[in-house]
Amino acid sequence: MAGGGAAYQSSSASPDWLNKGDNAWQMTSATLVGLQSMPGLVILYGSIVKKKWAINSAFMALYAFAAVWLCWVVWAYNMSFGDRLLPFWGKARPALGQRFLVAQSQLTATAVRYRDGSLEAEMLHPFYPAATMVYFQCVFASITVIILAGSLLGRMDIKAWMAFVPLWITFSYTVSAFSLWGGGFLFQWGVIDYSGGYVIHLSSGIAGLTAAYWVGPRSASDRERFPPNNILLVLAGAGLLWLGWTGFNGGDPYSANIDSSMAVLNTHICASTSLLMWTLLDVFFFGKPSVIGAVQGMITGLVCITPGAGLVQGWAAIVMGILSGSIPWYTMMVLHKKWSFMQRIDDTLGVFHTHAVAGLLGGATTGLFAEPVLCNLFLAIPDSRGAFYGGDGGSQFGKQIAGALFVIGWNIVITSIICVLIGLVLPLRIPDAQLLIGDDAVHGEEAYAIWAEGELNDVTRQDESRHGSVAVGVTQNV
Image: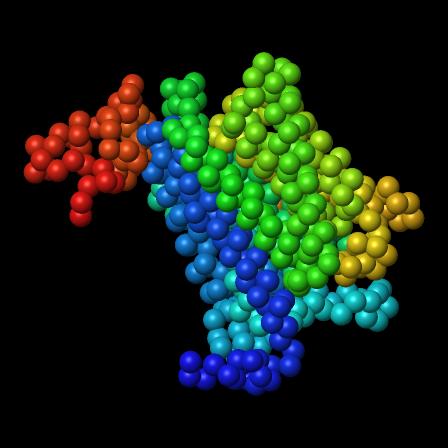
């Protein structure tokens, strides 16, 4: 292989600062997170919805995954992880130039200083190139807006969604990311968000609920009956989501170190406990276990452990799993049905419960259970600890709540503004006539080459004589 030898020696392709193990793990972690979205959530969304919305739901995820990439490298990465512009926002600039991408990654705003200006903690500079960091952080941005889409399935106009994605990434996601991860005011203050309980899950859950309010509900018939079209494929998507979380939490120390190993182990402990807890509650109250319920419990466990994955002990991961399998279950299965306000908002997949509630729960319990030794392995602020360990731990819990309130407030306001502005130009909701038909009306495609029993079909599309006797659907030969 020509030139291959240089890659294994100290050279411009392999500089002294490059840690090949860290670089390999970081790119592997990024790929695992990318697989959670594409094909993970594409499959899950396409199969968990009613048959007539399979194509539209999968495409919303697919489009978002692609659109975020361009936004990220052209302006959004440096708004999230670049030089400071405002206490909550970085300076927008491209992450495309060779000089920037091949240099050692540096998160320039993450240096922490005492009040007198002296240095408390150096800025983060992982031992791999900026290109790796741009890749890793991009797949997190992508999955955030895809999770948000779960609140809007089955009725949001696809053109409005195409406008929503870049606007929300630019004006909402970048603010949360910079504030908590990129060196912004919440990072400097010491709010803990190990891998996205607030930046990803709380923000997507709150923004999803807010957008669902502005978009409006699904058709009455869809709200009454919305069965999954393929539960086995739901499990396939859920499996990619679960195992992909190994990279989701395991990659956030920015290194293949012992804290990464703790994060991965705690992730699976909490997810398993939460799934079992949700299933037990289903059996106890409804007399039978639900596969969809088990998937919901899995997700809430993964979300809950995310803010503190590498910072809590294994017993705490079990406690967090018990809480994440029960509290979101209660808010979804009981409180939601009793609260008239929640009944008026059509959150298709219950993203508010599985991500916002579970993310807030995870952030709060991290403020209780963050272990001092593990905190020192990861956090820039020395001597951090949860309230359970005494000392200044009580203040850490307060910081976690305050950080959550900022993320909640920002997402409600910015998501509302984005929806109102798009609504001035494009309809946010699919017309009622097309809502009755679904994919065939919106995309001219259907997920299955059979008619959907009990669904209203567009006869102009189903009449084969109009198409030269060629059946219309995704299985046709092109």
